[in-house]
Length: 232
Image 1 (cartoon, rainbow, N blue to C red):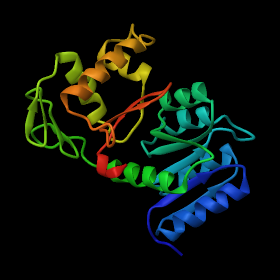
Image 2 (image 1 turned 45 degrees about the vertical axis):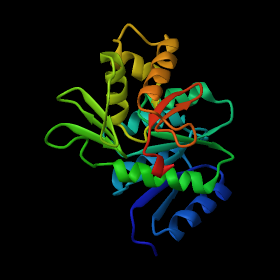
Image 3 (image 1 turned 120 degrees about the vertical axis):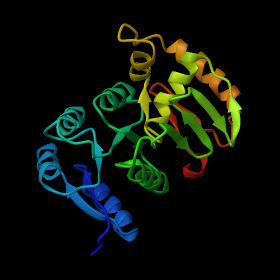
């Protein structure tokens, strides 16, 4: 029996639960299976879990509602499983507190990589004493409003800085268009996604992002994430 971090696997398809559990346990994690939303909520409330892998399409409770309920008491990372084309549901789950998503049919290595990233950042300090965020060789100094890449200073406008800093506070996590717009531009914004395309493009140029190993990743129809290229 594995004795690593316990991961709740929620899916009503037994074959998927078995495959995920076997893959997790082969890497030292403990797999905790659940076939319904009610069972998932009960386990999340009573078991010492490190992460939740949650299918959005369950027979009893909506997966988006499960994300919302878990977030009422816990910051545990949640990776959702969605089907191709379910962008609205995916965005809704992310807005309700899910951290990441994988689309079915998924690559097991990709899912396991997302698990490692989520666990690495969960409960780690968001910043050190001088309020500096680091994602790989990207450094964001919140106190001085300074950014550097591999020690080289990067000049950003105030909004570009706020956009990048928000992502750096949640490394590896997908932030939706609405979340970014409301956090950076204000609560009256939410649909002006063209702002984000322009600003993301400008930031990529300034931090000299490598198209083959980008730090700032676009999730089409969903939002953006900031990653350490070594994690991808």
